[in-house]
Image (cartoon, rainbow, N blue to C red):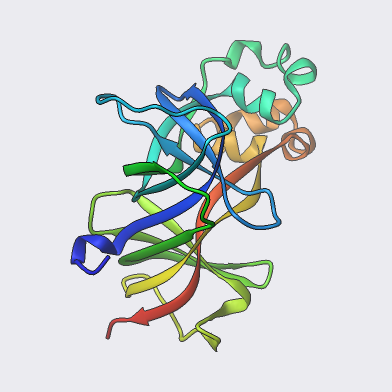
Length: 229
């Protein structure tokens, strides 16, 4: 991976644990190597022949991209395990929906292997940076029109050094590995994103804050970093 285009590239290997039709695409879930049970979704091509079964040990190489989808209010409540308790009360708002995106690999190749690989190389421009749980995070836009990808700088470090003062607009190049991070969103967040914050006092502030859904986000944990200046 030495060309400019290779600076949005990932290679992983692991077990294919499931193949499902989700969000209008066929997504294969690949278990990442390591003690933690982490997974990455691979969007299988709509055209072309491929043989893949759950249980196969595979190596996947390709590029990372955000795959957009729509989440409805009932789907959010189901994820929050509140569909039975809150679904009936909010039935008249069932048409509410928001746009989300999940990070997937668009594969160039899928081959049989037993090697434990997990490498990603990216270059892009920071559009947002924040701190959470002692680590720094950045959303970057890559050159290959892949949407926005999340970078995790664990403990605020990369390459064994503390991060410089990164800011939106900085161009960075990094090598790292794919991980999964857990985050939660409340019903308040959903209604705000759906532009129906007017419903918050109707439903009740305490209730909209107590209903929370759990999400898994694929991110790149940076090992090395170059900051352009």
